[in-house]
Image 1 (cartoon, rainbow over the protein chains, first blue to last red):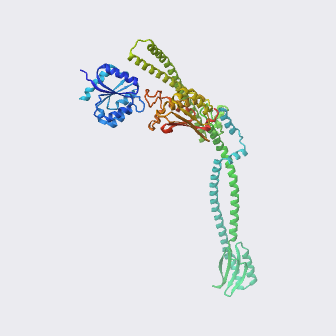
Image 2: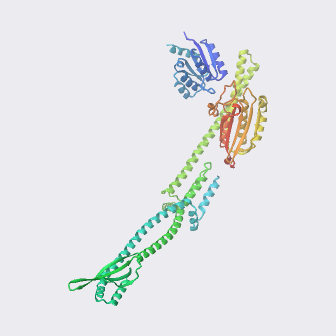
Length: 135
Length: 496
């Protein structure tokens, strides 16, 4: 029996890409609720303002205007600390640069580094990461 | 500076014949030579002065001891005779003997004195620079020594002093002459041995232009080891690399060659990269076009519902974005590679033309553009056009939603700098993003709010750099943005 993602947060600057993720997540049937942000700083502000809201997964893009993926991870870890760490974060990006993967893995909260596009297998894989957090 | 320019400057210095007059003239006009000579001559003069002083002092002492000896001679040789004359009270004899004494060099006054006073005296008692010397006169009568009186002589050392002064004057005069002659000789020697080579190297180094292919630099010196090498090699001028000048000469040549090699490598790498970027973008256009066509076809003639319609629209927008991005990259790669072909560009007229090109966008945004530079910039016309077009288009695009966009283009001219500012009253750029926005593909907004590839300001920065200028962001009108570009005027005027 696969776990379900109760709340997934999507942070990606491209509206068209977001629409696609939403389609994929909904089709998989493994996600209840989806929140979307096009600016990382907006997502950060939301997380800071709503500490009781439990986000299961954050799908995070790297290349975004103003605050990029890495800057978001840095700022969130600084501001939200251990609370932030309970959330599973997966980098979702077009980047093929191994340096980006290495950099992402330096952050404790990043549990997975995936390349776009978002497939069903990848979504299932993420749900399987959740029991680790609950334990 | 062209190769011929470099060559003729160097040749001119070399060709000036090595005549005595010329060497003296050049040596004299060289600051370094003058300092060298001044220091050397000063040093040598001080040493000479000290040595001379020592010698004069010794001579003076010798003169004084000679005087001493005269007095002693009087004592030994003449006093016995005088004693007898005094015993006999022979006045004439006494006088004659005193006369004899006075003739001796150094004795200026002599007198015989007894219990009653002065018996006889000879000479003048001037009393300057002299001292008294007294010798007692006695007569041996049987075994008894009877005291008769004494002989008093005045020993003058004024002569000794005069002689010393004369010697000193002569020595100093000759030394001064020697100093002048030697100074002249050193100037010439310095110029021949060192100065002219330094001048040549300095002239060569200042005229060095890394853009031109290196010309071998040779001092053509005639030193023993160079001559030997030349004889062995059969007539060709050789360089002596065993002394400092030779090492410097060899190093300069090495530097030039290394520089040129590096520059060539750099240029090749740049060109290769630009060509690659160009080829890549060019080839990417083809599939992009195909995509566009297919999407259009689907849109027009395909069977689809509402959802699909939205998706097709998204596909079309995304493909268009890709096309624009490829075009922008193509533009950028062209600007990076572009050679300098500068002309005078009238900024006011350029902005007018740009406003005509962007007339539709400007009218739609109800934008006002005021250009009051009245300047001419020496630059690449096409790049200048791209630069200002980018800036004006940006200012119109990023307008503030509450007010019509206003753009002001002004300039400030100083003798060595031309500064042009494009200021707008748009949404502005936060200070923390000022550095970022010039980066490749860096954007501050999502595509749904403002379109763009993130290359606009990057291209502007590159164009400004191509013109030896700097670009910076600052506060504009009412919280908008001002972009300030500063160009060096002197260098821009050079015909290349």
